[in-house]
Length: 149
Image (cartoon, rainbow, N blue to C red):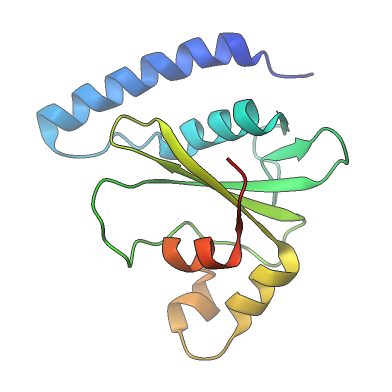
């Protein structure tokens, strides 16, 4: 059943407000970046969110059925080494989308990279974090991917 993005958007906006208040009080993140990224990618790129706990992907592109894994990163500082979540090569997916959010959890940029390009980057010799944990830096992902929004 398709997700009602309008209704979901109302809830996500409430969560964003709560997360901003939480950060201002505690100087710690609330931990909603992934959910906000999924919502914003679906809304801005016209994706259909997949069922919860779908192994490998978070959404499906409506026009061609491509399976999309969605990663999110809240970029508050200009740390070039910030990493995105694990990209699992043993799961089924066609593309990974990286949603960059500002300190207010608002999207600033969305990048997309295809499986072939990401596999090559993740298997390239030299980095234990990249090779064993499937971790890429935000800057590396941006260099591989294409700006979609």
